[in-house]
Amino acid sequence: MLYLVATPIGNLGDMSARAVETLCAVDCIYCEDTRHTGLLLQHFAIDKPTRALHMHNERERTEEVIAELKAGKQIAYVSDAGMPGVSDPGALLVEACAREGLPCTVVPGASAVVIAAVLSGLPAQPFSFFGFLPREAKPRREMLDAIAPIRHQVILYESPHRVQATLKDLLERFGDGPAAVLRELTKKFETVVKGTLSELIERFSEEPKGECVICFVPGQKEEAEAPDLDALLRKLLETESVRDAAAIAAERLKLPKKQVYQRALELKQ
Image (tube, rainbow, N blue to C red; front, top):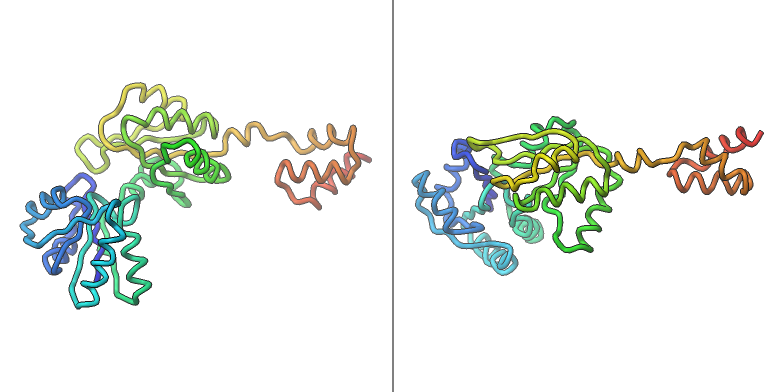
């Protein structure tokens, strides 16, 4: 069995009894950083061999884990903090187990994205999680384009020295909507700052400490700039036929063509 074990994201008190029992019972623990995990294991008096499995060797180590599972070993995987596979290595292990027909399970625990969804003050259901925005211009733009149609809470992870720059990108792309920046989740100095994106840009003019989560609702800019259907149809009908005006308006406003055509007929009459 492969066990993906969630670990605390800041507060060691969030380590579950089941997580400790599982790590004590397995034959080997694969981890994102052996030094980081070593301190966690030492705290809970867990004496097990550890091996590094991180983003740079994930494919190679995944083959090794599969071989050990086929040999009957009990294996655990932990990332540095939180749930493996969520903006951390682990997903390839699960895919490989499914492909090879090997059993795999999760020992649940802390996850920053779930905590942020609740603490943000924005409606928590539904929400969409995109991890870290890419730093390179093209993939960053592509991810922002993917977010654009969403009209519910979106959650991003961000490093402290890039928080303000990312908030500015969100404001420019999506307009000045409701948002929250959460930092140091589960720790002593946990903070949740709520407001509009423009207010948060001003609030974080100085670089915060600790890893951050940004929650916001996109769409305000598009909705504010969206033309009124009747106004758009009247303008189009000055130069276009009813059919053509309806087709253009339906495409521009993403509305059903039949509905727009009927309204265009009414306005023309």
